[in-house]
Image (cartoon, rainbow, N blue to C red):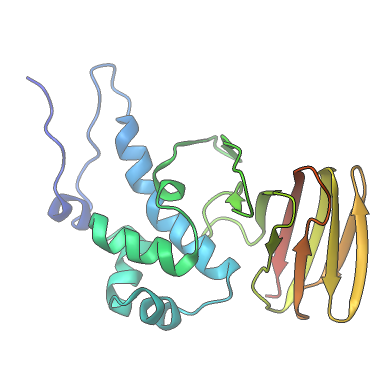
Length: 204
């Protein structure tokens, strides 16, 4: 007898995960379970409090808290609002990832402009946040300003990194390490797509 999709009430109550015929957890359940950690990781990356995200998304802070904890599966409307407030497409929350016992491996699907893709694991397990970014020619990305540090590595192209009032031109194969307490932004002034990876670590 086929297993039916679990309801939001089952999820909120911490019900047992639905298993496939071979005894493994259903793939769609893994995706649903990852929504909360992804929301929390992005919120922290943006330097937002629960209340600030809730206000920007026009949903209650309690709902955001429940989503992050996995106590509630958000409706499509709520997830769209949260995605809009965090400035990411909704697919960011429903793309699959593979996690091992000690680490997390995420499949990165390239993007075409200045859309960041988080590549680290759940925020409750890791403090650092890794992001892959593809900057189209002329595109600019402004990460959230918060106390901490960032290591940026350019994989291809050239990126102008402005930290406070200083500009650093970082080319392919080069890296830049800087404090994130200052305003900072990344700009691709070249004619080709620039690919880079950033790893940020907030202050404790």
